[in-house]
Length: 122
Image (cartoon, rainbow, N blue to C red):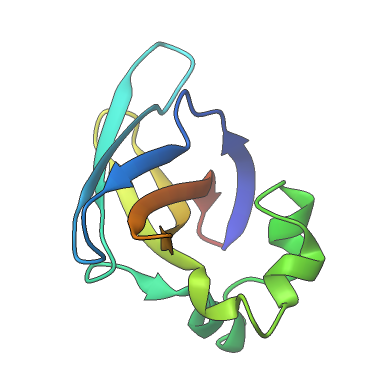
């Protein structure tokens, strides 16, 4: 997998009621103003640790793209927090990797998107 670029998002944090909620994420997938919509959920995603363990990607690559600081990505305390899903846009004919988490803060839940990255297969 080759990372092309990180997509700019208009919104990175979304309120949720519970861990098993779904969040609709919409972003521009090309320079022509076309949008792509995907649904984020813990059930439909995979642990980022698994992808790194399978050598599909590295924390260094993700840190260079601005997903998060390398020290956070590698942190044993935070590794379980990072989730990802792959989504393909029929409009743009491109594949994207969405890295996110669901987190609880004092009884309230939120979904944070760390990055949407355009990818191509090697």
